[in-house]
Length: 310
Image (cartoon, rainbow, N blue to C red; front, side, top):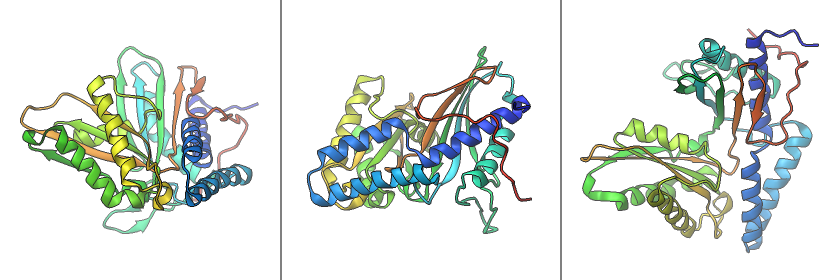
């Protein structure tokens, strides 16, 4: 019988969930990759997709990450003001990352900028990154986890366009990034696009777009149409799986937007690779939880924390 405190229990759940997301892809990603594998026709693309799925089988069989680059950990937290552990969440998430680093294990990817040394436990100044949405009068807490790998982070970019460039300028910006850097990000990609006023607002929206399920659409019908057009346009580039050529280069395009200043169009792009390791877990105030992204996750309440080196 576990005698963990509420803080220790939530930390343990998130640690195990982070480790699980490193090993097994989300249900929607697996479904989309299966669909694209069936739709591709060339022998090379078939071999690549078969290798991807063999990789997934071995990751689960061996209990090891499905990609050696387990990224820098990022969290998007949508937390109610009445959630009992709100004051401890940021420190709790950092502890969960350290625990998962040694328990899973995860590759050490947190390098202190300018000092140029690897911390050896995936935490450092500002890492893991935590983005917050505060929900008044709620006692639940949603946590989106994301492993931002080097390859899938490389195409990330943001700019501010003159208003006269219009949405054609947004399209050109996204396609330019895909033709110049999409190859390096291990296609097929999930492409997140943010449209707002400034570089930082657009960039946050483009990352938030990657948390959305594959196949979902922007609630604005014009934005949803643009999602479909961009998907068709990027597929037409012909990157294919792992950039080796093919009919399908993306798993989808997700656009998130806010209102903007009339004199500017801020736009940003972020992408997730084929091994798109994001997770979504929703906690109630008693720490009961629901996972929406991974049907196979089971929490082991009696599992002890990893031995964390000093």
